[in-house]
Length: 87
Figure: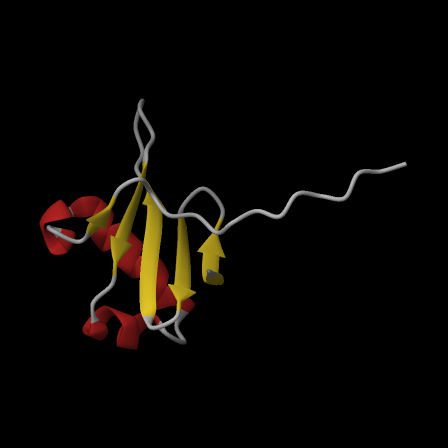
């Protein structure tokens, strides 16, 4: 999983092979992360455009109908590699 763009406490745009995913955070008293598999049109708009990625995250946040049937559960995050122990 490769992180393409990210904005702390907002969203992550990731690519794995031909598949692209946008994970974004909801606001309010109960924050949750939501991952969506992007369609070809969305991939084309965000591929080289961090502003478009942030805008798409905001659009998804405002209207869940935009990604209906494409939500990935549990949310997707890049795999973390553990830090080497310090001596």
